[in-house]
Amino acid sequence: MKIGVLGSGDVARTLATGFLKHGHEVTVGSRTPAKLDDWKRANPGGRTGTFSDAAAFGEAVALAVKGSVAADALRVAGAAHLAGKTVIDAANPIADAPVANGVLRFFTDLNESLMEKLQKEFASAHFVKAFNSVGAGCMVNPQFKGGRPTMFICGNNEAAKGTVAGILDQFGWEVADMGKAEAARAIEPLCMLWCIPGFLRNDWVHAFKLLR
Ligand SMILES: NC(=O)c1ccc[n+]([C@@H]2O[C@H](COP(=O)([O-])OP(=O)(O)OC[C@H]3O[C@@H](n4cnc5c(N)ncnc54)[C@H](OP(=O)(O)O)[C@@H]3O)[C@@H](O)[C@H]2O)c1
Image 1 (spheres, helix red, strand yellow):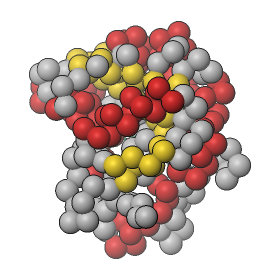
Image 2: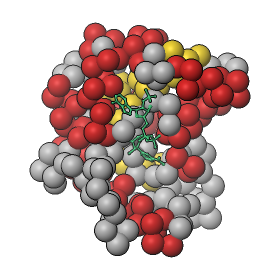
Image 3: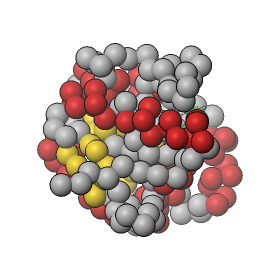
Image 4: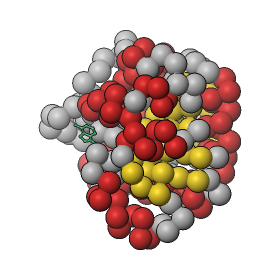
């Protein structure tokens, strides 16, 4: 499928390269598209442009910008370019505050997630939380002794979750669907948990697995 990626950081670049690897068409967007020139040289099959170019291009859109500016980036991308589309939401609501004993601070609270706020503002888009609970280096076809790790997802639209589940399967994940948008209140803080071994012990290579 055609996927527009919003962002120029590690997550945007990693997901965009992963989408190309798995046969999708990609346009990656930034406020300053020249920031992506090196990505374009390394990935000649991909395109780059503005946030608006990327959102207009995608049948699905991946949101990979700083959480505190996610709404701004989506406004610049254009609500009309998101209408009816799956938005793969990798953003975390990390506050600009010091880490305390390895624990990040969020600007949200446990009764309203970033994704719910975005879903309310961009009501005709279909947000699906995904890829937020693992580091960029492990997002695409991670190799762990314990087998396929689990990606926890949620969102209000079943078809959109099906689209994201298909991509996650290609990317080597098993999918645990946690239900509607409110479940992002629990999935977003997995980012905090995931980062603790990194901040405390410089251990950034791990992922969660749901056992039954
Ligand atoms: N890094 C990881 O391993 C990881 C893992 C899971 C989830 N996440 C989450 O994924 C998201 C992306 O993370 P990242 O580390 O790749 O990059 P990041 O440094 O968190 O974000 C970089 C992006 O934010 C955009 N941005 C910054 N200020 C902006 C503004 N005022 N208006 C619009 N856009 C603005 C930048 O746009 P321009 O291109 O225009 O400069 C850039 O594309 C974050 O929400 C993060 O919490 C990160």
